[in-house]
Length: 429
Image (cartoon, rainbow, N blue to C red; front, side):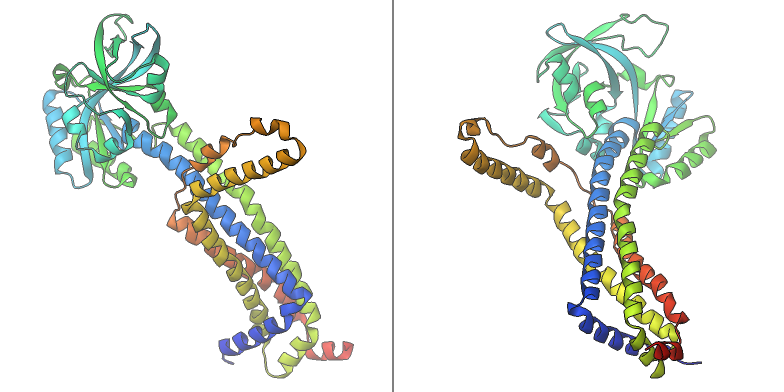
């Protein structure tokens, strides 16, 4: 069996590339590389931006609202203590502390009111939850629930009620019981902090108050928020809890707001498919270009065969050119995507100023009276705040896909090499 000669393939491939450097084949190859470059860059940037949007939503929901697991249906004070000790001893648990929540009518100092979700939280225990404090970005005041009449509200809620630090608000119907009337009781609180997280629904509806001591002893209304060291192990930990306690119910973050997470996933997949069309066009371009190259190189293929090159080696020779076309496009695409994702804010600020400068120059020439009304496009500030999170697995997959899509297109096109014979080519020539 004849040995497959990679060095010979590499040498001949380089020679062919040098010959085609100024011809039409070189133009086709370079355009294909540019297409791969923009495809890789577009996919990585779009996926990174979508990851940034999704992770800002998901992190806020997981760290502030849903936790990784919500454990409820505790039957007695003894079971509350047992479950708390179980979480403290478990190596999989980052932290766990009790809370209870209810719908409430909150009234501001000016008499305006709105519905809100009030969460009573164990303040001392929540201070150990570093991710909760991190996501609960305080842009005014501080996270302080050290007294029973302190409250921390979301930025949207504060805007609706015209609240500021030190404002007094009144909460109605803090009881979770549905048997009591809406205005069964009321209590005044002092605003100590205003937070702003990555999810607008939490900003516009959530408020935190300290958990009353009597409710810490009431298992019917108490829920434990559990944070795991690895959020992906939620199902395994939930099964362990059910085996250990039986009656305790566990709601995973995957089940909490399932429809919302599903919508985010669908949006990301649709954008991926739209940008993926770039690769379809490039694939067809490389396939047709390689078919044309093989037709033009019939004599060279016959000569290489006469010199001892096997059909598989010649097939791989042209496939290797497709591989290099993909590599020459994927590598710059990867570099450009990293630059764009790392400098998203600077790029959009530059585009904003560039657009304003061009408009100013044009208006100065053709309509100088309207120059005074020009201003920078405020949407660029919104675009500049777009978060971008590059996922290593996605980046590597897209990079390799850009390379091997070109390789596969060239491989399919070069299969015609196997149909050529030396005698047929030489007879036609």
